[in-house]
Length: 178
Image 1: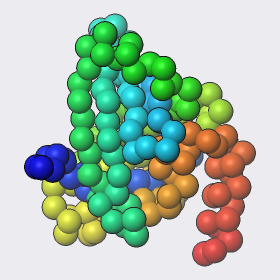
Image 2: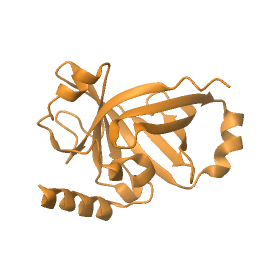
Image 3: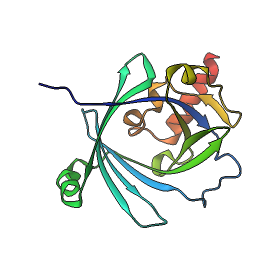
């Protein structure tokens, strides 16, 4: 049997205090609804563009290529129509909601997620790379307060069970370890 053709994501993740200037919450963004299916590597993603009112439905399988290096992920996406999405909706319930903003910094573009609901106050920036050397050599941007790429706590599958008080506690533990 042939194995799936996974897309490889090379990424770094940074914790932010707020959106970097000149971005504000009123800027153009996407609304993401991520439902993590318990005891699987699957998530059901619903993406809405407030500007166009368009919806995109995706079933994703995501996992790190190496459990000890969360900078490299394997992903597989299946785009769903409304009927397919409705058939899978019964798995909803472990949901993270966030607004995603695009932010150009230098010659790179960040995806900045501002979390809603129980995680209100959490702001994470992801940046993707084409080659490992570029990823490894990238310096933490000045608008970030910490890098959390290899902290499993800050992955979606872990965050879905957390609230902002948990995030604050984790950040304090990170600071104490310095």
